[in-house]
Amino acid sequence: MRVSWPHMRVFMTGGTGLVGSAVAQALVDRGDTVVILSRAMRRGPDGMQFVGGRSASPGGWEDRVAGCDAVVHLGGEPMARWSWTDLHERAVTASRVDGTANLVAAIAAAPAPARPRILIAASTADRYPFDESDTRYAESAPAGDHFFGRLAEGWEAATLAARRHDLRVVAFRHGVVLGQGERGYRQLSSAQKLLYRGPCGGGEQWLSWVHIDDVVTAYLAALDGQLDGAYNLVAPGAIRQSDFARAVSGVLHREAWTHISEARLRSRLGPYTDALVNGRRVVPLALEAAGFRFRRMDLPAALAASLDSRQPGRGTL
Image 1 (tube, rainbow, N blue to C red):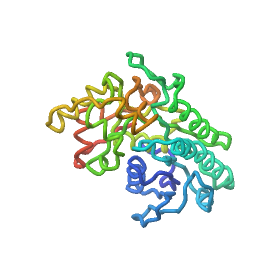
Image 2: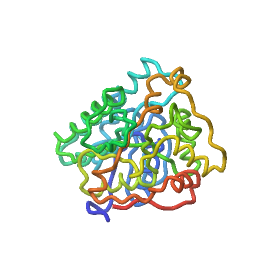
Image 3: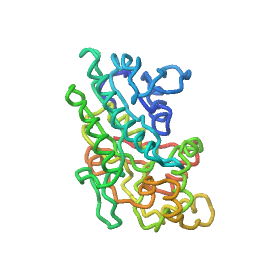
Image 4: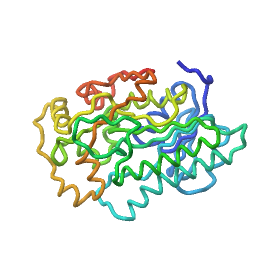
């Protein structure tokens, strides 16, 4: 149920990625207008407009923020790539921390009557300490002392700065997103697809996942409702990577593949390897307390849906 206004105008970064394209399409489908900041200009369907630029680089795009009801911030340099260098690490950090700060500055510069009222931004469930125990990590848990923890702290601090301009702010800490249909699978990076091939490292690390249908519904709920603060956007049932691999094998009707060694991964992926060979049991405590109900809680069914675009179903709030 929508409780805000009949139609929204939403400014979005990262609108061509796995999550962004799904959220943008859902907004357009219900009659909203989406203004997408993109490095590649293109023509979209009715209700979807593109403006050239990147949030990490100031430019003429800032003027398009004024007059929008909300901002959805999903932009950032892709983390998972085969060649990790110090330059890439700096680009990953700058695109998220500086890019978010630039976006908040553009919001602040908009005349008060035309200023967006909501900012919803992505973060990562990898922010928590690495832990193979059964300890459940809810939103109040501290960040881990590693690259992803430090990145998430800076990223979320830049996001929450928008509160100084009277915005309601939501930071969604994403788990591994299972795409919708074959297109969703193709949008995953090669490094992310490794999770579908077999356990990375020992296999006993926790993997926190969520299906794109529930991600889309959470973003719409955040736009329409009263969510405020940080939320773990993960399905209630975290799973060990070895069990995830068996579930993938069951859905694809093939034998489970062998473990991918940490040494082999680290030689190519550098620090990103930590996100594959480590984990922690993340739970969506705050989101469920707010009344959100996941529809994709069964992993085999969610995996099947992620490979079959004909399967319907989204979460509800």
